[in-house]
Image (cartoon, rainbow, N blue to C red; front, side, top):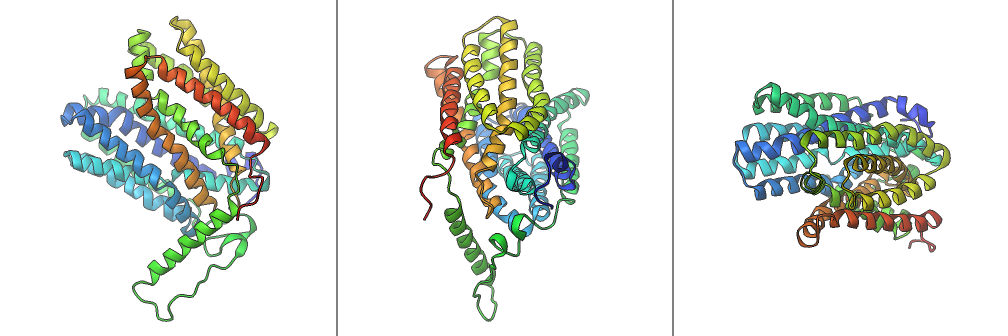
Length: 433
């Protein structure tokens, strides 16, 4: 890959196009399985309990989250193509397992493998885009385009599968065969990704940071333990470089958690709230999702371009503050036209936050060990999606139905304050030892 490419040229590069298509297709598969297919299939067809379904979904997210940092580390050493193709084969295996296995244990294992198979997606995408943008970190446009692929795929997957289910009279075998076809297609797309990683300073999978040699003193006569010795030494070098190069303000870590914690607070209760408290019909609810999600997807690319031109600070400040205010108002209104207006404003605020936040985090990533650090950051950020639904359920059951929305507004206000501090002092005041 080339480095220090202008934002518009990044979008036209073969790497970005292949990565965009890979992200889009994988999110279609995930969205279809996790939102539209598996909950109904495991409950109505297989008769599994809600507890089993919850465990299976938790394993999927656990696999995705735990393997992000290792997959980012692997991508810098064996290349994007090998990392993504290997992982996506796991995704295909998971879909095949779901088709043929009927037991709770088998489907739970399939969900875990699905999570592992999708884990390298964002670390590879973020690492590649950050490397291509060069020292100026003009990658807001690319980040917006990646979020468009993710949101578009997540929305298209369930809609497409629901439509197909209706047309096939709920023939799940056909659904799984279509998803297997999508998995094979995305493997073929991933095969055009670059075979080796090349970033600033000539770093690649055969050299360390900025051309530093990574040869170590291995046993004179290689034996069966030699690969494990090399792996252990490589991991030690990585951890040492991460500690010595990652010099960010400690507030970055809670900010990463809070960013997805908000989504975790909202995701389990938004449907329940609109149906039970606002009395919105299923068709009207679909329109509400289209209004909010559609405006987010449409605005992502132009906002990304403006982020490259004006920087991340104004968009994050406005986005966090707007999200805090609109989420709080959403918990207090019941008039349907006002609800639609508020949801659209929430969509606009997220369109400001998503590309600007990723571009801001990219400025904190040092050149050495980009893949591993991106993976670590994304794992920390994803952990908010694990904790958020638990807290949301407790607030819903024990305080009030609007409580999760008020809590999410408070977290967004906290993010506004944290980012205000980070924008002034993104790095530690004292060097890391």
